[in-house]
Amino acid sequence: MNKDKELLTRISLREKDAFDQLTQKYTFYLHRLISRSIHNPREAEILLTDIFKSIWKTPHHYFQEKHVSVGITKVCLQMIAETVEKSPKGQKHSPVH
Image (cartoon, rainbow, N blue to C red):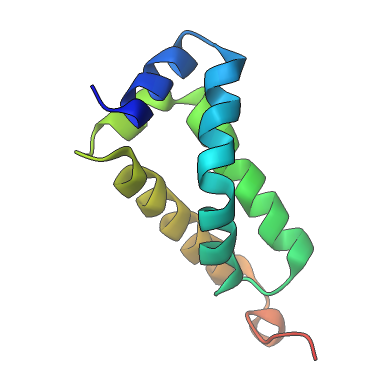
């Protein structure tokens, strides 16, 4: 079993240390991915938190892909799309100058 799947197994057993390790591993990557579409820092931070909440609540969901990173990326992209869809037209994704 690879390291990420091992962490997910431990997360499903509610091991906070495993969750912290996974969070540390993916925070920078996910933040960069989110920031490309969500330019409001507060909104981006909320979205990042929601992704990690999803991992904590349903770690088994991320076993469906061959690589955990693919599952996490798919969820992130889906949540970005939902956030963009809900955003008012004028505020969608124009960077703050």
